[in-house]
Image (cartoon, rainbow, N blue to C red; front, side):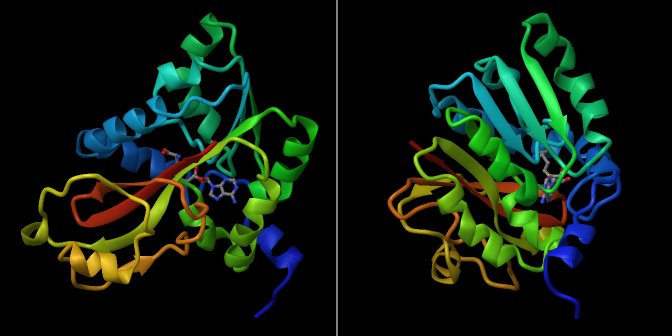
Length: 240
Ligand SMILES: C[S@@+](CC[C@H](N)C(=O)[O-])C[C@H]1O[C@@H](n2cnc3c(N)ncnc32)[C@H](O)[C@@H]1O
């Protein structure tokens, strides 16, 4: 196996057909929008509770902003949107563009792997705040070195307000196994033991995000049926 920066940079090249997003994701988000409504509302409530004092928001992995509420975006005067998906601006413009323009909110795209461009953006604006938008649990689809890159985040984000919602665990479910599950909060990170206490058996994919949120941050856990047959536990938290 090839390893190192060149290989990873090549794999995480911008395009509209990616494993972590792109055209298939837009069609899935449109097709299952009703199924996604409870999760969309949960994310909106979570973001409503985050009050970073900043005019510039860097959003990592926004795609079309399918789960980003307009009123949250309107709190800022400048948005920088980082996404590998080159089709994202088209769908984002349909969903949010007109209102952002009407309000004079500037938004600018970076089609790049955030691992390579976020440090410079953070350096250029020390007041900017960051939202990781369902992307950190997908990094393993784009980069073999995702664990090392996730471990670097605290250094990049030191003394900065930031928030993230990301995949924590996911599993296939059959129609008979589907149950109504409620969101909850915890200071303990979700792990295999917690999954068992919640009464879930079966095979879970660990998205490698157990240490993304610093110790002591309140963790919100949101259930999300991404399709009728695939269930995700999404972890969310805000720092500062
Ligand atoms: C699961 S999708 C979620 C999209 C969006 N947050 C939403 O809720 O609709 C993950 C998004 O992150 C983007 N992405 C994945 N890895 C990335 C990386 N390393 N750098 C920048 N964007 C990335 C994908 O292109 C995709 O748009």
